[in-house]
Length: 463
Ligand code: ADP
Image (cartoon, rainbow, N blue to C red; front, side):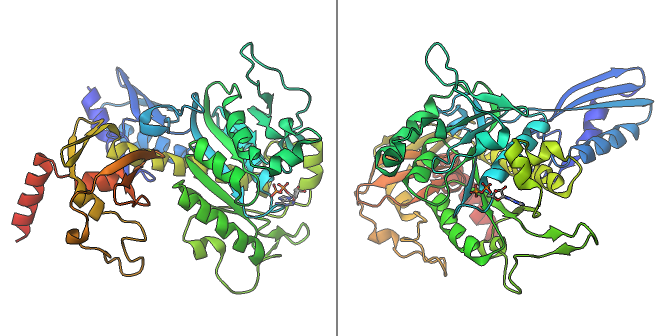
């Protein structure tokens, strides 16, 4: 008779190709039931939009079927998106929201809103709870694209209730725009209004919130990116060089605020001839590298030029709902899967390193208690020395520009901030504050008695 241990052992040979670990140690196997020769298992993935869901299901079935004594196998695939907020705590600004995706572009007209809307609808179609925030205050178009309109309702505590259409919730910052508003939006008030707006929407529980950012890289984009605790950014561009060139700025902006760029979507990437079915690169300049190659980030998707798109937009019908079988709809569905997978991978990596649960200065040391119980310790001076910002390390050679002896012996942190879900930014008493210490780096640099002993014995065995 087959038992639970046999089933788990068989399932531990099934690997998640994205997270590069087996599904048992990833904790995906939620239930194993055995009745006679019938084995039923429940597998919980990290996103309903998992691109390898079918492949994993098949591999689970095959692994269990190969066990002696098994006559029937039921594999049920479920999903729970993991919360991606600071140190495992939900974001203060968006408490019920697990993952926030920003959709950005360098300039207007490249199809950023079209991509944001269709990405959100495709994620919702996979079974996720999805919200869409139209933050493109200069040209709000989400309401038009989704066919929603009218005055928004509010909750008793005066928070905005989002509209609902096509299986998702959405709200537009354009609702704030009155006829005098353009003046305000250009002034310094814009950023604080935007940040305030974020807290005033009653989203409820969401797996993904997609934010359609305004084009470009101004104050409003920066404020939103910093306050919304964005899990990852998607950059929309077209093959035309000029659009690609301006998006580079967006890439730099996310780098500066330490938001991971998940990749690039190339919109209007090609045109398929209705008569001969041949693909044409309409806008792509001959030769030359493509934006994602130039920037060394993943290509998340290529969306074809879709002549019907404008007409569909005017009807408030997102492409993914109207033409499920078309090339563009398939491209958006694949985009949603890649975005969901990229977020799951980031989340998995962050969770593996752990989060600092408490940080304190004691004597000449920074003490970090990690949520896995590890008691980390760092000598101030050595930690300052290990700063890996461009000012301290040569970008090309990787060489340190200062020696340990050159670091002020009395240096100490004056302030410490957590950056996203993966790093600390330490402000030092010598005035230096551009360094970001990722959690992974801090774990590697740890000088606690245990880690010091382990490092010494590793050095000994190498010698
Ligand atoms: P942005 O948000 O970057 O300003 P929009 O999403 O509003 O751009 O798109 C600009 C215009 O281009 C819209 O009229 C839209 O319908 C059209 N458009 C966007 N993507 C495509 C596409 N793949 N094929 C055809 N038209 C498109």
